[in-house]
Image 1 (cartoon, rainbow, N blue to C red):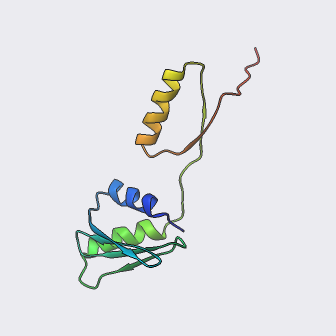
Image 2 (tube, one colour):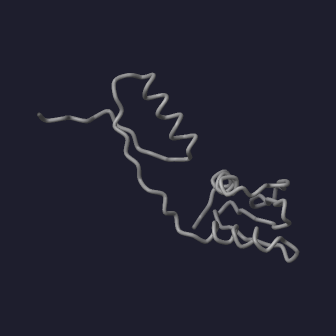
Length: 110
């Protein structure tokens, strides 16, 4: 799977993995994890995991995250006419990390 830096950082955070520091690379960014793992995220979207002295559980979790297929379900939201409710729904979905496609074009036949 190809990753954007922000997406991978969010996924690491969701899995309670702490990023100790970040280092800019000429062709991407390197994340130094609290447990010693090094994650290189290249501008191409590929990821390389390093760290001989890294915490083995941390490294196993990172490998699992980076190598899995994107199984994010597609969510379709039919918006109502109340902008405040639509904004609240957007905020809740965004905070939960759920990407969605919204439409206001729903015709109900009775």
